[in-house]
Image 1 (cartoon, one colour):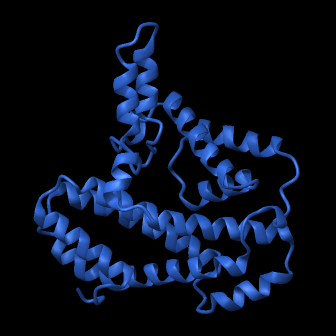
Image 2 (cartoon, rainbow, N blue to C red; image 1 turned 180 degrees about the horizontal axis):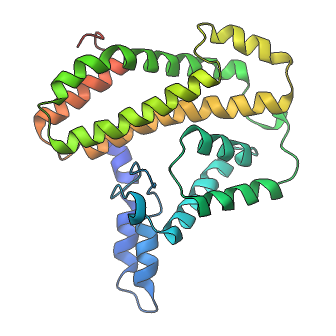
Image 3 (cartoon, rainbow, N blue to C red; image 1 turned 135 degrees about the horizontal axis):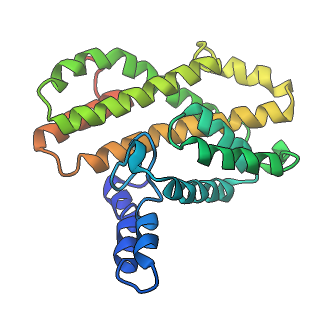
Length: 251
């Protein structure tokens, strides 16, 4: 996986694109603004500015949705299923007009791909399930102790942690609804081996999305705290370490 510094260089591309386009003739200033916002999200969890609500214009959302779908298409032929699952897993990233575009694309996509056309199997995804389950379990164990330490943190860090707490609650609710935290994910995977390929494909997409979201949250937190105080950064690193299991849960 990419380290925070490597990821920081990658996510700077909206800012670089904006700088290149903003001074060109022919309405490039409007285009530059769209490019700057194409990785933003309605709930404030995007980058580079962390826009929220009305700050995230519908035109920019449309470009953001297109970019996001392109990324899913690069991962395999089940992009429409993955997109549908992702918007249910983490609601609030895009507004209703953008979501309607997603629904229309899904309706027009026709027959879903066969499971054999997608990379990996449910058994291959089992380690991802176990990893997500461990992170969510550790979060439930450490959140109380870190609330005390967060009382002394900066307002910026407290706001960021509030975003993360909300996202973790969304992930926990969806993880439970999917039956993945029933205590025996291995058994669930075995039981689903005889289910319909479509159901297996949906679960596989869900598992991959869970795993991606956990990693995305870590990257986003590290990026946003890069310029915060040393005390805030120390607290963030200890929280991440506790969630990943490299610190005792009572840290």
